[in-house]
Image (tube, rainbow over all chains, first blue to last red; front, side):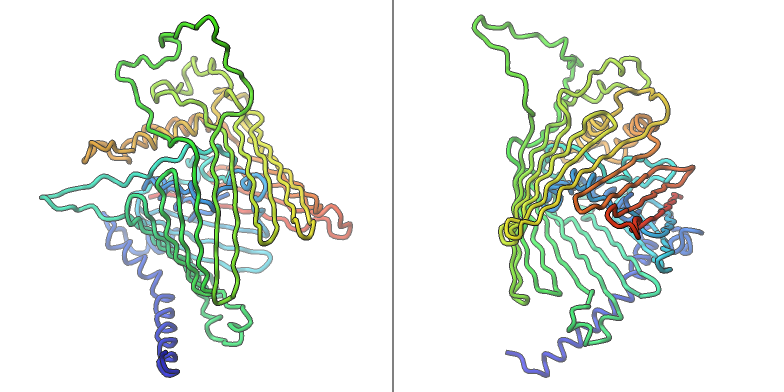
Length: 51
Length: 467
């Protein structure tokens, strides 16, 4: 059985991971889309449908 | 109307040959399309664009109950044939009554080898949508692990709910992540899910009775016309086959879920009978919309019909639905819900009516043909086992059938859906295309309330383009 301290640490790590994923998920999609597309479109074309 | 992201997701499933209809969760899809349509509330605007075949961007805005918006991005590893809102096949954008084809074992994409090494990668899809001003994020990752296995990770992350611990204890925490593994072999489809928030494990199983759909063997000599087949001579004592009754196939499924954290469990079972789509002639026999012979094609031999029954023994809930296309443009559905413990019941009736522009040029450009074409797209893309490397790519096959799709449904102006239920709710919705935009207009009214007869009214405008 893990101690209270370990439990707290695990919770903190999970929360941190969730925050990182929350803010990096969409930039990641745009990055993958930008690098995998051939020919590479301009970045603004990927970000905005109005461009 | 499907949101743009759903349209792209379905397009992705189609491109990768995944059959999303062969899931227990979609057992009642045909009747739900007529009875459980979502009426827009307030004003919705969405503008989407696919700058290339791999990437799609979507902005949307809701106004009138409150102003909010969202930005969504989708990346797929395979090229998708995403159309613009002016040219997309209208029926592809609508959740509609449809008789689904016999399930087939999904085929993976052909292996690609370059200098002796396998270079093809597994297909995947990444989707993210950020809501403003709340900052909530919806994320989806789907990967095809093998030809018959697909993994899905879906997450909702709300930064506000993680801040306040008291909200979490109240159960307001909407943040969740769900893992799902789907295994489809055609005859069987199993799905395993795990939801992190409530620690819920779930298993869903669907079994299709009868034989599997097999790719149509196309005769090489081109003598597939039934009238040219040699007819078997009848024996003296042979009786004619008794006509009547519906010919179809049966699927049965069950779902079981359990959560140790919440100390709860549930089970649900379901069965579905659906008629077989009419026998599909080889693709070269599908009448082209402009050929005069197309008008001589008779009506379908039986009305496309789907009957479903669901039973949840723990909650005592019973639901039975009957849906059928009674004419080319009209589908009707009736559903009865009953609870064996509380005797609560509800009866819902609905209709779906396709409106066409003037006198149609093609009298029978109905779903059977669409379904046929769909199936041929599917059949043609199915690689034969003996072929390891297939010369034609699916992307090259599809455009040949695309013009048929467009022509056969080009006269569709819109669809009207209506439903009425014994709880006095009446919903009415029209969906159509105006210029290059897809429009959906709906109203929900409560007949029993004199003070507030209209419960909700809404308008949805959707525009998407390519390039």
